[in-house]
Image 1 (tube, helix red, strand yellow):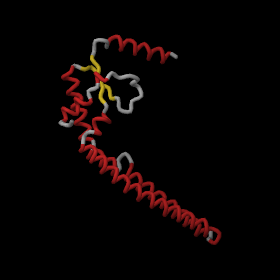
Image 2 (cartoon, one colour):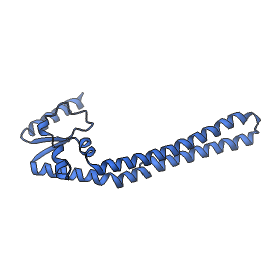
Image 3 (cartoon, helix red, strand yellow):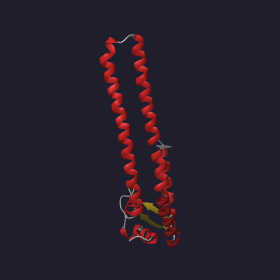
Image 4 (cartoon, one colour):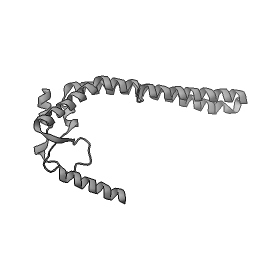
Length: 170
């Protein structure tokens, strides 16, 4: 309860202090969807991701077949053979999960490829937004893309098209 009161008080104090400041918003999804190099980079990433996903699914199918074969043969195997087969299945599963992390993890190939292809475009957009904020004297520019905290936005303050113009796109 104290946190809620403290939060509301802070918001009230900040909002009264910012009445004289200018605000605007942009829709980064809209901006990025209008940049051809971003679209091309995204398509390239989607192709690579689909290829990697197909490889991983194929490996999981092989693993499933291995497990099903083991279940069928289990009755006929000695305790030592069962243990070896179980270890083999566990090692194979571990290898597939490691491969999945190499492709899709935080330090994975796809993440690095995204950093290489998309990040420079996003940085360029961010720098342009920052430039517009400085030139226009805006205290804050919100991003309305996928944001649930903006219940109403006046189109007059939408600077998305201005960002695209500054970037050289129509």
